[in-house]
Length: 165
Image (cartoon, rainbow, N blue to C red):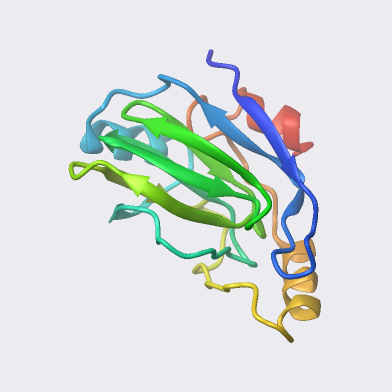
């Protein structure tokens, strides 16, 4: 079982972030989009899209998100403008708690990410940390259900232990 790296980010007044840690699994999945989709689906994170990461700061206030890197590499700034830049590559998975900002800083031309949300999640919204949103999104984040399984390792994976699900 792959043990993820963990990162937490404080609310910066625009990007609320989360008390839950961002999870980064290195070399956790085959660098193949179909294989990542099968793994996520088997672990109760139905795949929702194939693309890259938006090149602007954004977050989801009503859903957690898994990013499975199928091809290429990217540098992503997590936690808002004052957060932490992390390099991800094919085979990595990042689990982004609801409220945690993410912004693509650079990507290779072949980047392909499989995105997924827990099977107990709402259709994800998208916020950019604009003035006047903060109070409502913080309330939304507090209501987001914890996932029932880890997208990489299932019910006995690290996510339930690290997130207290």
